[in-house]
Length: 631
Ligand SMILES: Nc1nc2c(ncn2[C@@H]2O[C@H](COP(=O)(O)OP(=O)(O)OP(=O)(O)O)[C@@H](O)[C@H]2O)c(=O)[nH]1
Ligand SMILES: [Mg+2]
Image (tube, rainbow, N blue to C red; front, side, top):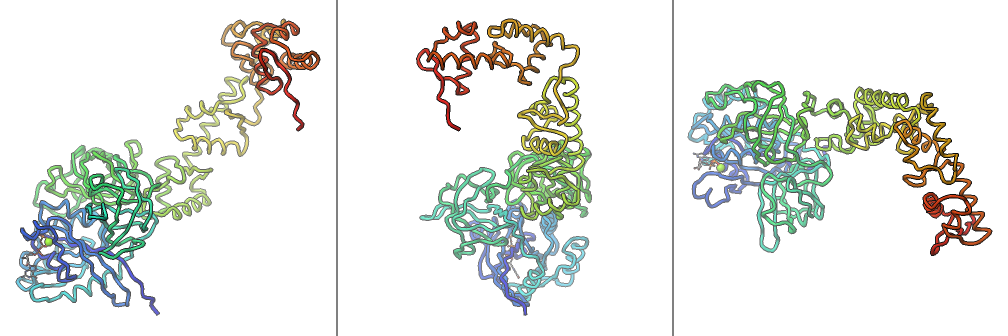
């Protein structure tokens, strides 16, 4: 037996001005979507209107559909696009008396650019029109579009013809529509912001990608405002949780109305940030156009408006292979936006000209964090495995938690893909880093080359400093270096403090500097407790190299910047100091200096060192021994 479920969907109207969209919404739902006084006065729709349609599907499922009613006037296409950004089904309206008109065409293209796959066509004003003629005109117009097989239902709000049939047709279509996915990355593109007395700021929008809960901490991008949801409503009903596919109103009492605007996005923190440079796959419709501006290719470097979600942003478009974008073609392009947007991989957008009179192209986001160097290849955007591989192939590597965070896949789906791909050897996963195999192999080989070169060039050194390795490899992220080092240290390499070396590497001085070493050892042995200053010993670069080697190897102790002692001299001094004090009681620097035959220059840092090491303790101008702790 079929279990009855409740499904939430979003329908939006579309179609030329005066073709009867709002009248139809009223006939379907009882709600007049034209709510602004100016709309009532001018009898046109200016901004978005909303209504609820609850129906029972033929299989018994309850369908809660929200209808977004859009304006048809050419001056308000911008508002129309804001209304159709995240919809499941278009209610495409063509009046039987007028037939196909300019905004029928423009709205169709907008829906296509936004990837809307389903539509029901209402042939309105059937009481005054030519049903057969216009029906075949519509069929012809829809050839080669995703709506080519969409049902056409003649309606009239005057005679109430076809309204019931339209409701049933909508219900049937929606039962065939996949409900919106919950990937735990909710996004609510804000379409209205207002304030209610005693309640405060309210924002509304269509929820996609995940649910929002009362009391939840949210962030609004791009202004980057963090706040809590006080309450949630959908079509006037109080809700604990709003689901994807719901028209949603949320009360944000801690924010002022002027801090938020249409186009901003409500989401959860932790999934990337808005950006203003994007890599996209731009497309231009092949539909024949008499209007030159629309038919004209999109030129490289053109100033445009990008409509994404409910936002509209000025931008400049540049194509990867220069040239321009011809009708019927698609091209990878770089968008530089005047202000950032919060876009995901796979998001659709619409491009309008800078005068905002024409819809000239559309596209899909390939990389929301793209820069010029990382111009993308086209990939299968709906397959998480291929998206992971392509992203890593393009970027080289990524931190696991950042990988595809701005995509239409959940964190679990991405983790699973990483595991599978690693198992199959298609990618490398090391600690927190996921990397492209070829990239990682090259990076590793480069690192090995640098380590070997360091051993060869400076055999006296313990290895290569990690900071040096990082800058030579040009790795920005410290986590990537950590993973690389961990990977190298699995075999053949070893990390010692901030240095990495081959396990087999034993620091040695090269033959030609051995006389220098001899001279230095002699200098330090001559007067072991009061040797010459470091400056005197490090007379040239070879001497400096040897001193560093002797310090790294522990043969020489660096007491102070300018005071070097042979390790054995240091140990002897230490034991003579302790012996003297234990025999004679606390002693001054001067006493100890005389007993040991040293100088203040050496004695002061020596005693400070012994204090630090917990051997001696200073009291007044005397040193005493620290009590030996029973360990
Ligand atoms: N004869 C007839 N007139 C209709 C019908 N539906 C709507 N109209 C009339 O057409 C005019 C426009 O209707 P609206 O519903 O406002 O049209 P719209 O498509 O919403 O217009 P915009 O939102 O401005 O694009 C109104 O005067 C309606 O009374 C119909 O089925 N038959
Ligand atoms: Mg209207």
